[in-house]
Image (cartoon, rainbow, N blue to C red; front, side):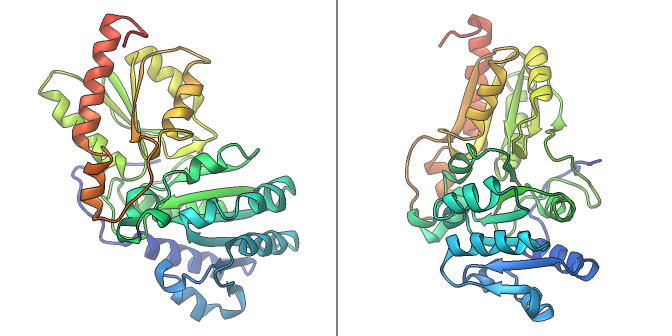
Length: 327
């Protein structure tokens, strides 16, 4: 069960620290927990794990595809591998290994892709994954999760240690806006209604959740009541919740730190057309490459702001009033 904070501010805990501490606690409980990294041990914050459990920690070098192959092999002999690289390399460069060595072979591999989208910041376009979830979403059986804050990191990573299968997680390494109260737990595959509303549902994930909550306050000035859903599991998508929101608010906005092609908006749209079709406005990266900049600059550059979400909600409500699919 989750509880939403009464006010929102930057988290005291770095996302990577929450990830490392959780894996260290799990490793103490279960000797099968192993960690792999592609020459990013400092960046990933996993030095404490490597120091505490050197026999269960593997830096494979800049060889992400091999890292996934090794993780698959460790799974085949009963280990529970968690493998990390930046999101661009953990998805694009490893796609075939995730597909064949892990998913097709029905093994037990967890992969973390860090610094998704604009959170890659000064690492620039080559390291700025706007496409990682889209690249992996067509792999059969894979579960895709975007972690919202350190509280969610701790609970979801702990759950994954006891769940079998191929999972891909994306999250920033550093501070994010804290959304959930300590001790919250999360149901993988289910979205969280963070705030209710009757005029439009805004589905968001990752760093766009905080922007969506801010947009909700902006929309009150226009007398638009927005429901905010943290749809942190992109696959399998929460079909039941999407249908419920479609029937109740009758129009959607999706907000993602990702290319809209193959992303969260696409996943929600695919779901809603099967149940109760409604107008959908998408806030996300519109088929562009990344670039260097501060996170705040890049949010504005790619339209990933509360203002952009509020404007999209206004358009969505207007479309609803004019007829379901009017533009």
